[in-house]
Structure formats: structure tokens, C-alpha cells
Image 1 (spheres, rainbow, N blue to C red):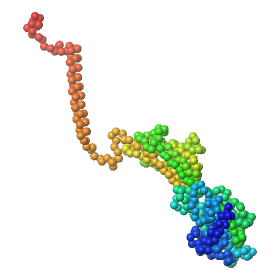
Image 2: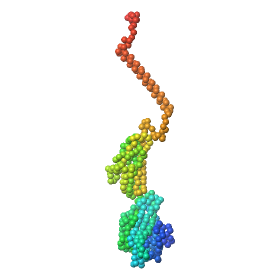
Image 3: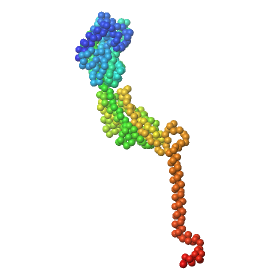
Image 4: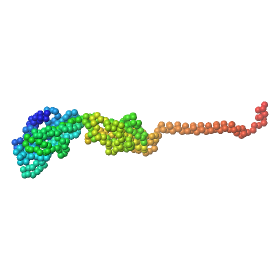
Length: 434
């Protein structure tokens, strides 16, 4: 498939090379000396021929195309999750064939390095790079370091796409014994990996017959996740908001799920909360595929945060922790607690749950909401005052009446009233006898 795609590429890019290359990707160094097939370089230098019969202008040597497709490689491509893409890096020591015998045409310590974006976002360009470095001796026998580079671009209409290197897919293609060799992952390091014609030791003779190219495959995967945070007073009934009293505890449950088809890396849970709430010591636990029964993770979720590592597609991570409401909170308002989950170095999601603290009777809200002045009573308060006064007077009268009646009863029982009663007259007594 690579051979067929290269043939198609040859026709398309040869035309581009003949009509000009002002619209191709960024290469460098821009001021390097260029050559032609008819007039090659007198010493070892790479990718500086402007009319290469195979690819056109060699300065444009990094391209990309959909894997397993006969469509030509291009400088820019739109990637779709679920598909694979092949990066193409051409290399050619442009020294004339007759310079190899003298040594001037031989490049040593030749390496190729490449990079690609881990994440490509909508309406943004991701850059795929290729660098070729080598050592050479010029005609004055001075040793130099050489370097050339080029770029290709990827875009997407999806919100975010992850590009993942397909392990073992980096292959060198040429006519020597090194053909078909798998390159090490050092290809993606700053220093790169050694290439060669017969062996991967960095030795590259001059002339087109020693040229070749490197291909490797990138897998496009979608990024997606769901985050949900809830709060509870009893750890059973969950909601977005609850009411509680000052000094009490509330429990938070955070559920994070990878709903895409790409592994999410460096997943970090970070909590932030309003003043008036504090994390309860020893209450934070994580539940995931490796911790079915929960694992205590220390009191750092609201400080540096907690890194759970990688989360595979479809995996669910749950974090549960408690917070205490400050004892002296007297503000009748909601206190927010927000969880943020970041991953892949740049993605982030957040969700918030709230606890509403009710004021006890007689307590006041924030000072700035209630002026420091005597509260004026209205009609309802006056009516209530009158009723209270009447009730008090009635109670006092009832108390006096009850006390007086009780005294009369006691006097009759003791005979005190008889002793104090004045003597009746004789006439009155006789009349009573009659």
C-alpha cells in the first residue's frame, strides 16, 4: 500500500514542484542552499533539491494521509475519530554519487525525529513535525552539523481528538538491507533515532538510490467524559443542594466516567469550596476498578488535588468525602463546593453542589444585608402586644381572686370567723328561740 500511495504522491507533488511551492507547509532553514537533479550538492546535505522526480520540492518532506488508502499524502488533513492516519517523512542525501568515494558525500550520525499533537481541538491546527540531523565535511575539510525540518497539519470537526502512536508502526523504507526495519520510540524524542541504508547506524551515502522514507501510524480517538457531583446529609439521599445546620457534616459524591474511546491520562480531582466549609479529616475515599471497596487517599483533594492516573474508555471513578460547616456560621445562604477534573494536560470539567445553612430563631443574616438599627414594629406587632398585655392583666386578676377564695375556705375550716364574730343581743337571741 505504501508503494502505491507513493506513486500517486509522485505525480501530484512533481506538478507542485514544477509550478511552485509557496503554499506548502513550513520548512527550514529557509535560507539553505538548494540544488536540482541536474546539479546536485558537492557534499552531504539533506532534502534541498527543488525538482525531485519522486516528491517535487524536497523541502516539503513531511506529509500525512489516511492509512490503507490510495489517496495521496498531503500537507494538511482533517482527522476523524475511529480512523488511522499515516505520517510520511522523506529523506535524501543530495550529494552527487561521485562524492561518496572522497568521503564528502557521506553523511554520518544521521537521525530523524518526529512529533505529533497528543490532542487536536476543533477549529485548531495540530502540527506534525519531522527533523533530519547529520554530520558532514565540506570541501575545506571542516566538520559541520546539519539540520532541516518540515511540518504537516491536522484538523478536526470534533470537539477534541486524541492522536495515539500505533506501537511498532514506525518503519524505514529504502533499497538497502535496513528496509522494513522497525524504528525505536526514540523517533519521538528530541534527539531522534539513527537511520541508515544497510544498518541503522547513521551512515547515509549521497545520491537518490540511497534515499528512502519513514512511515508511522497515528490512531485518532475521541475524547469525552461525564462528571456529576451530588451532596447528602445521610449518605443515601443525594441531591444538588441540601439544607443543614451550622456545625454539621455533609457528604459529597463525585462520579467521573470516560465516555470516549480514548484513554484519558493524568486525571486529577481538585476540590474548592466557599469559606464556611472545611474538609473532614480522613473522610476522602476513591472507588474504581482497582479499589472496589474504597481507598483512603489523604486530605489533599482541596489542596494539591489527587491524581488518579489514567482512566480507560468506559471506566468509572467515584470519589466520596465529607465537609464540616463552621460552628459559628450564621449566614442564611448557600455554600458552594466545586469539583474540577482535569486530564490530558489541557481538558477540564467541573460541577458544583451546595449546602444551605438555615439561621436559628433570633439570628440575623449578613451585616451588610441587615442595617444596624432598631427594628420598627408594624400593625401586626402592635396587635400582638395588646393581646399580650390583656392576657397578663387577666392572669393577675385570676391569681388574686383565687388567693382570696382560698383564704375564706381556710378560715371556715379553722373556725377563725366564729371567734372574730361579735356577740348577738339578748333580744335577738330570745326572738330566735321563739
